[in-house]
Length: 123
Image (cartoon, rainbow, N blue to C red; front, side):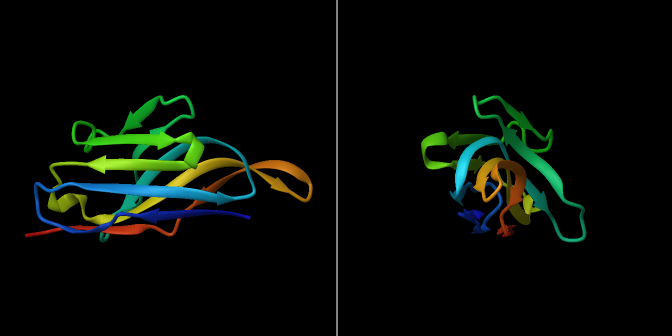
């Protein structure tokens, strides 16, 4: 069984910063792409940023110059540093990862989601 657990969310004033973390645990063989998505109030879930195993990154235009995604493969963890936060960044931020896990049938690949962490930006 594989779990993704996010942390680092909270309340912050406009212009502030947060660093989100997402740790994968369980019967993991390997992890390919990891990423962050968010869903704001009354909005659909949207991609924030993704990172491949070798470190190639992709960002939504809305966060590109204000965010940095990184990962520690030894710790099975992905991070999202967000700076110059705006009220429109308010959302539940969820981690997603493509993970190959040990199962009774052998190693199987699947996409996994964390439960999310709330980021609230207001003055």
